[in-house]
Structure formats: structure tokens, C-alpha cells
Image 1 (cartoon, rainbow, N blue to C red):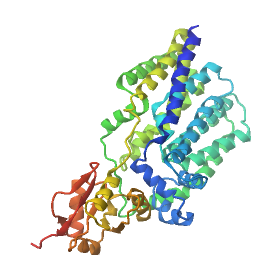
Image 2: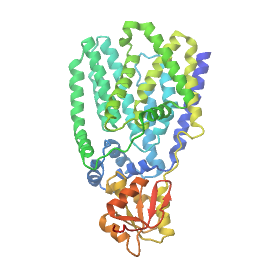
Image 3: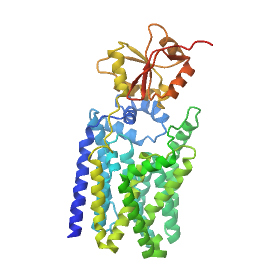
Image 4: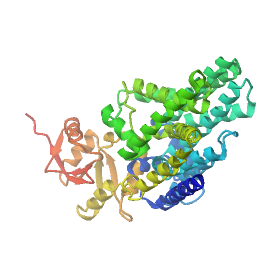
Length: 478
């Protein structure tokens, strides 16, 4: 009866979160999402998008290419574009259940499904117009396939070619969706190679399959290196690691009380696993594989962050499949050893669902800074031209112009000119042209003033805390 009640309660939380995935499709676009839409705009020919946007962006291009095709199936709208991410989110739920190893008991499969369905971060990714939802799907696929492969290797069997093909193809797809997915795939392949060497089975298959996948991914590594090595290449994220680590934990696991509860559960289960299996712990693939993925990922990201800080909450969303599979193994182990612990599943599922209810965690307000700025220009200033400092955005000019067009009020005719020494001089003459700095900070304004020899006439108008609009005059000669 306790098991039945636990399954029912967990199902309620899962169904609620499934419904929320559908109701949140109407949310307005955020700033990063606007960039993604620009790179998949159906009004541009694909060669133009590839040359002027995708090849100038460090992010892998597969999601943008797929979204470009999706946007040709129907008129792009908020709901239609978000449906593409929702499709990946729903497929992830299906994969979490039917992609699990065949010998998993139904209750263990349900545990993984329930945790996947109620995860706040996965619910957000299911309508977020970025590559996360599809990248998470590929991580789930190659991780669950790797579980099957490692189990067969540990049993001295040579896995079927079809299983290897799914592993390498999903890994290649993930590598072209997100860099964290790429890192997790090659980490998983390394762990599989360890199993292949340990049990002396399929070593050549793992090695050469991984080498071929890496060779196919290398062209984009070259593009990324070229962009980051350029004199203008920079990395924007600079949150201290301690604060960032706490933000990551909250983003992935929820409120502090839930985090503490999960950590205590994990410590208890790990101690029990070590005591139970001792020297045979490496053979417990469902525990060793996801734990190895997480530990190696943390190590790799820590090293890279010495140069480019990748210690960011939403990047680690890609590690959620590993976290949820590990949690499933820990909870199910406690269930086998202490039957009462089956209630951990509904407790965790309902805790995550309860956190989502007030929308404080997931519901992000639509980005309106540029929209309000352009509305002010056309209605209050009556201007027909705006000079825009596009260097502060980090986006290619073609992509940013497409983004800006979205924010111009309907029916307005507004010419957008890039801020250059020539346009800066024109903007400072009478009649003056308004100058707009997106993502504006005091440092950005100082850089603009020094670079273009202009300064504001009066304190700038600020929209949505980060968009500055002002008129300028030349800096007086000393």
C-alpha cells in the first residue's frame, strides 16, 4: 500500500509539471532567445545565416539549423517556437522511461521518469528557446545507452552494432548542440573505454568510434578557437566560483532545504552502497557511470574556467540526466535495503513541483528594454534614425540588426545605424540623433565616450535597467 501511495503522489507531481510545460508556452521572449530567433529567422536565406551569424558565434550550430527548418513549417510565433523545445522535453520523458536498461524493474524506471518530469530546470528548458532541451535529450540517450553498453561489457558480451551506432550518433548530435553535451559525451566514452579495457571487450570499437566522432566535431572546434583567439574575442561571465556554485545547486536542485535533504540522502545511500558492494563497486554501473560523469565534468570545467569561466547555472543543466540517473540509483538502493524509503520519490517530486507553483523560480519576465527604448524614440523624440553601439552586444551585426527589428514598434519607420566615428560625429551635430547602448553599464558608457570622442548631454534615459538612450556632444579638447 505504501508503494502504491508513493507512486500515486509522485504521479500527481509529474502530471502537474507536465501541465506547466504546456501552460508556460505563451511567455514572451527573453534577450538570449531573441538572438536565437535571429539566427533561425525564416526571412533570411540559409547561406546568409550561416555566413553572417552562425560562423561568428561560438555556440554549436545544430539547434539553430533545426529551428530554422521548424520555422518554415508554420508562421513563427511565441507558442510555435517554444513548441520546438517542448517536443524535445516530451521526448526526454519518453526516453527516461523506455530508454532505461531493460532489466530495470518498473518501479526503478518510474522513479527516473518521475524525477525527470518534476525537475524544475528541465521544465524550464522545455520551453526555453535555446539548445538546452535538445542537448539534454541527447545526453539522456547516450548516457542510458552507455549504461546498457557498460553492463554488457561487464558481463563479457560484445554489444550489438546498433547500440554502438545510437551511442556515437547521439554523442555527435549532442556535441553540435552544446559544449557541455560534447564534454559529457567524451567523458562517457572515456569511462566506457575503461570498462572495455577492464573486461577486455570492444576496446577497438570504443576507441575508433570515439576518434571518428571527435574528428567529425573538430571543424567546429576550429571555428570556436578562431573566434575566441581573435583580438575582440572575450568572455563575459565573471561570477566568483563560490557564489556561482551555490547558484548552480539552487538552479538544479531547488531551495536550500531541498538541497540539504538531497545531500543527506546521497551520503546515506553512498555509505550503504560502499558497505554493500565494497570491491565490486566499479561493477555497479548504474552508480559508477553517472558518478564518474559528474566528477570528471566538474574537473574539466574547473580547468577550463581558469581561462574562461564556465561555472554557470544553466550550463550545468546538461548534467541533469547524470544527476537524475544517479539519484534514481541511490533512491532505489535505499528502497531495496530499507523498504520505507520508497517515499523519497514522491517527497522529492512534490517538493520540486511545489517550488514551481509560485513561478518565482521559472517564470522570467519578457525582455522589454529595447522595446521601450524604441517606443520612446518614435513617440517622444519623434526621431526616424537611431545610432546603435553594436560592439557592446557580443553578437554579429547581422544577427543584432534582426533582433533590433523585432523591438521596433509596429508601423514605425526607424533607421538603425551602427555607431562608428563617422556616425558619432553626425549624432553630435544639430539636429542630434539619439545614441543607444544596449546592455549598458557605466564602464560601457566610458568606453563609448573614449572610443568615439563623445559624451552625453545629460544623464541618459535608462530602460529595463540596462539600455541607455542619450544625446551626445563632442568631448572638449584639453
